[in-house]
Image 1 (cartoon, one colour):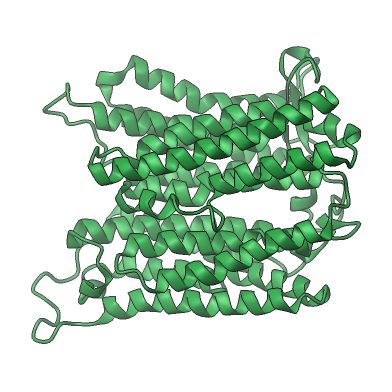
Image 2: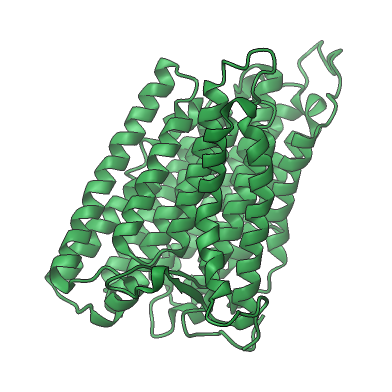
Length: 509
C-alpha cells in the first residue's frame, strides 16, 4: 500500500495527522489567549493556511492508500480508549471546513481587526477569533471521531461557539435569536444524550466500529437511534425544527453566517449519516427512510416559498439554506439496497453537501459586502447595485447556479445524480420535488439579480460608480467558482466517497 507520508517505525504518522487536525485550532486558540494584546487575527492568519495544508495531506493520504486512516489515542484501543478515523467523506469534509474557515478568516481580517489606537478594546475581535478556532476544532472532531459521547462533546463546543458568534454585536434582537438557537440546540443535545445512554446501557460500548458489529435490531436500538436522529435534526435545522436558523442569520456577522450555513448545520447531518449507515442494523426500514425524505421534501418546497417572500437578503439566503438542507435528507431513501455507497444517490448527496456549502458561503459573504456598501440588505432597494458591486452580484449569481441546479455547477451534477437515483428506484415524487425546488430557487435568486440590475428613474448610474474591487471580492468569487468547478465531476459514483466503506475503493475515479 502506497502512502504519501511513509510511516516511521512504531509511529502511525498518517494517523497523527488526524490528531493535529483537531489540535491545531486549539493551539491557535491558546496562542490567542497568550497573545491577546497582539492581535488574534494575526494568529488566525497563520493557523488557517496550516489547517488547509493539513486537511489536504489527510485527503491525499486517504486517496493514495485507497483506505481509511485511523489513530488510537494513547495506544488504548476501544472500548477502553478512543480512536480517530478518516474515510473518504471525512477527509473531504476536513478540506471543506478548512476552506470555508480560511475564507471566513480572510474576509474578517478588516471587520474584526484589533484597533491599533485602542489596544484595551479587544473584546469583540478576541471573541470572534477564539470562537472561530473553537468551532473549527469541534468540526474536525465530528468529522474524524468514532465515539458517540465524544460526538456529544464536539457538538456542544460547536453549539456554544456558534451561539457566541450569532450574538456578537450584543443587540437585543441578536441576543434573542441566539437564545432561541441555544434552546433548540440544547433540546437536540438532551435527545442525543438520551439515545447515547440507551446505547451504552444495551451494548456497553460507544465506539461506532464496535457497535456496527454488536448492534442488533430491537426496540432499544431503534428508540435510541430515533431520539439521536431527532436531536441532530434540530441542530441541523431540518424542517420543521428550523425556526432558530433564520433569526440567527439575520444579525450575525457575514463570516459567522457563512460558517454557520456551510458547516455548522452540516456536522449534525454528517452524524445522522454515520448513525444510519454504521450503527443502525442494515437494512434499515424503508418507511423510516421515506419519512426523512418526506421531511426533506417539505423543507425544499415550503422554505423555498418562504424565501421567495423575504424582503431582506440575509433572511432570504437563510431560508434557502433550510430548503437546500432538505435535499440532503433525500439520500436516506435513494440509497436503499445492499450496496448504498455504490449508487448515484450516495455520491449525489455528498456532492450536494459540498456544492451547497461553497455556494452558500459565497452568498453570505457577498451579502456582507452588499450590506456594508448599501447600509442595509433590503432587496427592494437594490436598484443600481450591479453597477456599484458587479463582482459581488456576479459571485452571487454564480453561487445561485448551484442552488438552482443549472449547469455547469456542482449543484447541477448533484441534483442530476439524485434525479437519476430517484428515477431508477421509481420514486417519481422525489424527482418532481427536486425539479420544483430548482424552479423555486431560480425565483428567489433571479429576484435579487433583477433588483440589482435595475436603475432608479432619474438616478441611473448614480455618481458613485463601480466601487473598487478588493481581496474580499476575489475571495467571494473564488468560493463561487469552486462550487462551479464541482460541476465537472463525472456523472457516476465516485470511489473517493466510498473509501473506508468497502465499496468502489479501487479502480474508479
